[in-house]
Image 1 (tube, rainbow, N blue to C red):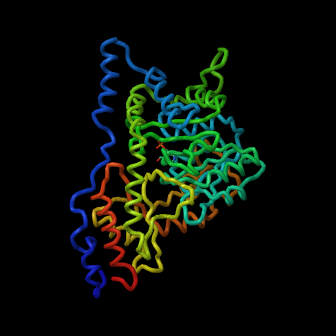
Image 2: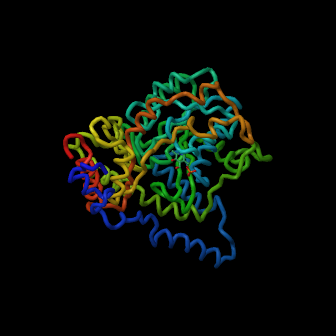
Image 3: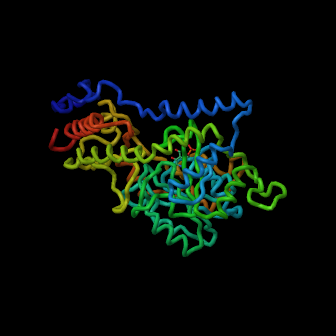
Length: 417
Ligand SMILES: Cc1ncc(COP(=O)(O)O)c(C=O)c1O
């Protein structure tokens, strides 16, 4: 702390003051006795009948049906991770090796690596200014005569400009996969994300809005033909919905299972309430900091109705006496949890830069792809940090997050501290 620290700075927990929260924020309580009963019931049946539960059985079929119903129709297939869901969607598109697939400016590695694993070329493009998501303009500029697909992630549960991206993709005969790993229940122009593209890939690992036990994912499409292709690819090429014969395409075993599905069915019933509660937390936090000149929620597209996997906190560095990292650390010291830097930019990763050295060497588009600077993605992540947003939080937790942000902002906003 500076020697001439203001009283506000001295009161910060990071400088030894009393934190806003002395007790940790409450956990999510994702699983309750209901999920436990569903799992136990499955075991009970297995013990009684002597038949082990497996996969693609009654529970999984019901989960797939109920997931598709929740999406408003279409076809869903439970798989074993969000990464596998994207892999199966891409596999179903039967892309020729060397095809270019445009990928998000910011994503989890599992939202990009499947492209490379299929011997296609991931082409990251920049963010729409002020957001974590792909810019439709940047996508359009990146299209070449080898572009066959685009993966559009709705990061943090905030919808990307998916309607424009789909419209551009249609003009160029490019397939669209929405990566909804972080966006269950988010809406754009009133429609659920995941219903705009050819495919949607969801993650249902236990950190996501809903979980199929510990890990899982769902590949979703409204196109029946594509849904069968994804199913075949996700189960070693079995000839599902074909007249018979042998396994038809090479694929891995990406299957989910009935135990995961039994838990997932209970979770699905809770999803609307999960989304609503997360929106309540976000709205409360945003309202509580609305008058702060240097701190705000991240910019959203006008018709976006996010489902908030986490909250973006945007800073105006010019108006602050400290940098983003110091600001975030001071907020976390007040007992709030989050991440200092959400900089997950694909072409900054080692595996991406050293693709030629990998065991399955896959292809580059051009050398510059590995060094292309994602100006907007860097600009937005440099000015923001994230805080967790749990559906189990109520008024007290919202008030504490707001109090922590206000306390730190008061200490570090120029002319205020
Ligand atoms: C945007 C995005 N895509 C894909 C994935 C991969 O999902 P999974 O961890 O279930 O494989 C994640 C996981 O966090 C993600 O956030």
